[in-house]
Length: 187
Image (cartoon, rainbow, N blue to C red):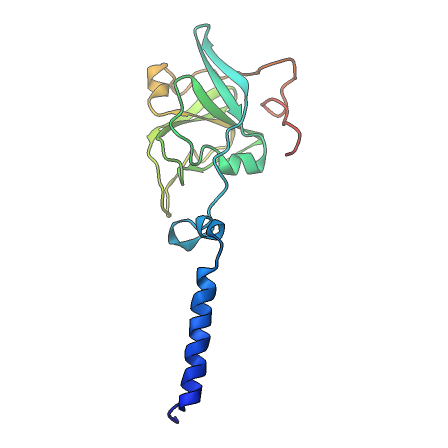
């Protein structure tokens, strides 16, 4: 290999300096759009309107956001602060399907209630956050018609156990669709 000449070194140095300066001109918004580990930052947390309710008894009704599309189900409660008491998210499945849930990017512990034939089939209680992959997944190996996520400890506090009846009621006059209220118009 031949040693570089002085003009060649000068050109290479100038090229490297130009690249370094170009890096300084990257807009700040592009830097903010990078998460940890250099991956693009995800969308902000979704907050859906409360469109359904599950009443255990007249004085204990859980207000529910309904994740009724694949995209809404994929986002779930990611990046959300802890749910207040008597608040949750309903993930309906029509037809019933085996559902495996995880806590990736979900910063608050949850109780997961797997529903089949109008009853709680299984409960995964106090499932802890998982901010970095790999994350464990939770759920029975049987098809479910939906999954309810509520704040950690709520199932025990409200006396919810396997076998507890579940009837999700829509809020408003719209009929239920596939186990949940109708989907809002696309964004």
